[in-house]
Amino acid sequence: MNTGIPPTLTMRCIDINSPYCPCILAETNDCIFCSHLSGQQTCDCNWTGICIYNEWHWRKDARDWQSRDDRDVPPRSEIETDFVVEKAITENTCVLAFRLPADLVQELKKTGAFVFVRRPLDRENCQFPVGIMQVDGDTVRVAIERTGPKSGRLLIAGDRRILVRGPYYNGILGQPWIDNIRCGRIMIVAGGIGQAQALPLAATLVGNGNAVTALLAPGRAGTVFVEQELAALGAEVIVVTSLRREGLDLVKSRMTASETRPELLVSAGPDEQHYALIAAMQAAGVNIPMAATNNATMCCGEGICGSCGRKTRGHKMIRACKAQADFAQIADS
Image (cartoon, rainbow, N blue to C red):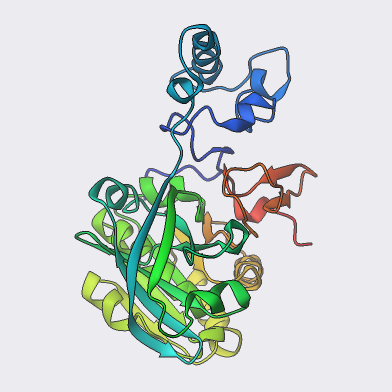
């Protein structure tokens, strides 16, 4: 079956030719895509869109007659708003809902979108990233897991103000596969808080005419909380008590049967789950593309702080908040 997706993924920047490109990395010769803006003398970007190097020079030349604010890349929006705890999943996991302006909401509909959130009175280093779970009109829903002081402070009793900064787009590694596959068989494996990301993934995939099977496990969240929503989208839903004890064997059995073998595997969960699914594919003797939620540590979202650095199997360091890459090529370190 020709589903329209290539078997390999070419690494590129998620922000390329967006309103946020060229970014501050171009100013420091650290652009992750343009060879000239990463300090090389030759052009080998293999890009057919608007030239990033030319765009950067245009802005640089404008310095003599424009103010700095006029020539700079626009900053990501930072909006203060109220939130409600719409659903308490467990003691430490809940779904928050908040309203945002229409232009920002439109950007957050993109698969893989995420935002940084914090309490308005907290310092900027208290912000943390959270993937978009659902967008309904001007209301945005996210799932929060209380794992430390940052997420814990957001849920302090009596304080229902939140500062939201975005949009950011690199919440899914392998997003071109998600966006481009048509009329294929897809298996989404979602565990723990990763279930929240399964919803926008399934919505995109079902909307593009794909047959989606969602295998759900409670994981660290302790419960399955998106079963009904996924079924309402038209996905086949399979619930297991444990991915390790039941789910991986089920994945391998579906991989080896021609009538159920997917053209694309999607892993929404922790990195340990991603690597376990890669091992399951290898055990089944199957080699298909796998998209995966991006679990890199992120502090700035702009590629300048270094916290999201991940090493590839080719010994190259990438900025995971910006670089679209095949998760299978990221070293297990």
